[in-house]
Image (cartoon, rainbow, N blue to C red; front, top):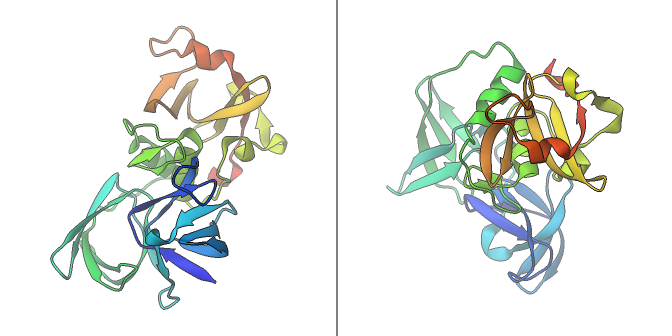
Length: 253
């Protein structure tokens, strides 16, 4: 059985209690697979295989009526609904759409109401990596939130996963899962869009996106751009000493 997330952002937990640790999030329109239940809670599996618990308040029955979805790739998008209400959605929400022209889009919310979105100017990106970097920078200044995946709050791996999803590349949820030894490269060979990993006692606990030339964008306290080069004014010495390895993202080529 599947259900659909009905709120802009829903927190998911390690157990069937709000007192347990938040481990990740789901965004409006995401379909989750129900694995188990306990009172008003459901154990679910998300699109990336991640399993956790969500309170039933955030869910509703799924509908397979619509197939094509629009990916919301602005920091925050405003929807004007048929009933006159306004809803603000974070980067990463995907909703089915009914009508579209060059300036406006009509999407359908999980409970059936339609909303209208004014579309941003059409950007003609030269490459997938260019679009990825532009989308990553939309997160600049977003505050760190453990288990977060959106522009309303994110952690390091949630930030990376959401940005890569925006260009059609699906990565696992946690930083240690995102590391792939078979794609390992030297830090000096990292190009824009590649991933850099950092560890304590050989245990990966942080990930960043390469901007090229030793520059990175990552979420630590908040999303920001820094350097791993000691002569740069924005050099992050502590992070540089924790460097574990880099991997090449071949899908960006």
